[in-house]
Image (cartoon, rainbow, N blue to C red; front, side, top):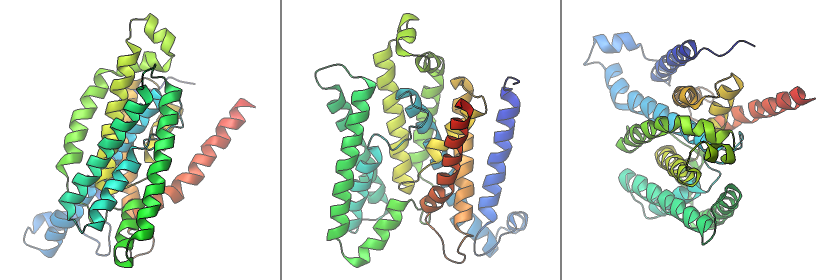
Length: 324
């Protein structure tokens, strides 16, 4: 098998990103001619492009990039290629915060603030409970996150059962992952600009950590500090993504997994590649969610699950066959 060439991979993913954004911008109940909209700035098509389509397309791409990056970091942190951004309960905290805001009739700004605040509370709870008075290892972190996620899930079920019918549909759409009312968010963009350089700076250390903690420690890596930093970066990316679009599954799981299967195991290549692949996948899924039952729209989280489950099962089957 020939070694993976970084430049063709990155250029191919850049082209995929541009095509996915173009497809997202022109897809909808009203099909837009993007070049015509740019030539006639006073037209209805131009208003639809700049006020509706472009904010949603950019939000979808940024959210997908955040999920892809969070998934790649979580898989290194837990040393499990099947880990995803939601495994440690951060999304559950964000969902509880968002549901509280929706129950109070809060607007978009308060909804995002409450969701991000809930995600941060969940992140701090997992960090403090997993650390405790003893050592903070991967197993303890995973068990704490899974248990806390189950607790958040029970609280979400209770809140849904107690809410009125008029509030229930909006809550369910948000929980399933919905970009229908998305606006360009400074939170997602600023988080991406903050987390990405930090992750790229520690990419060489991540390569060593992926080879085993003992090996990384022997080569001079402070494993405990590195794990804390990876957890914080992954949690912030997950919190921001969930705040913007609710729970969208399989993007953070499949994007890094597909790249690793293609041979991108060096995190200096994997991290920038997963940003573009995650953004492209969610951008394409968002466009398809507006076409499947047109003129109605599916929550994009439903579509990613419908497409992600068979693809993931195929990857598991392929991996099993390769070991036989």
